[in-house]
Length: 146
Image 1 (cartoon, helix red, strand yellow):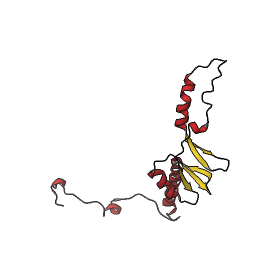
Image 2: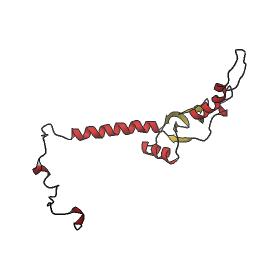
Image 3: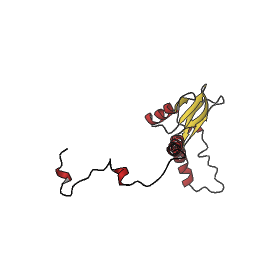
Image 4: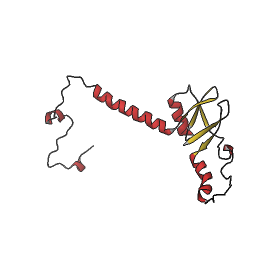
């Protein structure tokens, strides 16, 4: 997971990754502070844990372009911008949701293709006759010519 850091104009400055933040806070969590402790550890600026290298994609880009960029750069997220202002974030989880929706739509289409009057029944040997090959008991499948 990542959180974007933006300036007052809404322009992206960097990303704070959950793993980086947890690493930064781990030493603090391990210490036992007394009641009168005045430690300011962990009170530093965001820039101390922020990554300044990140991927941006325009809001006018296609889902395909976003997927390719995520995969090609192995990015954990893409910042979506319009006029250099952050308007959203795309992550692999978003594509998982899209994939599930597409699979459900495809599954529904299979059943929608059947007419209301379509007959559903049990297949018998005559229905399957064209796809099965009779093998005489004396033949060995391993010895058959190709």
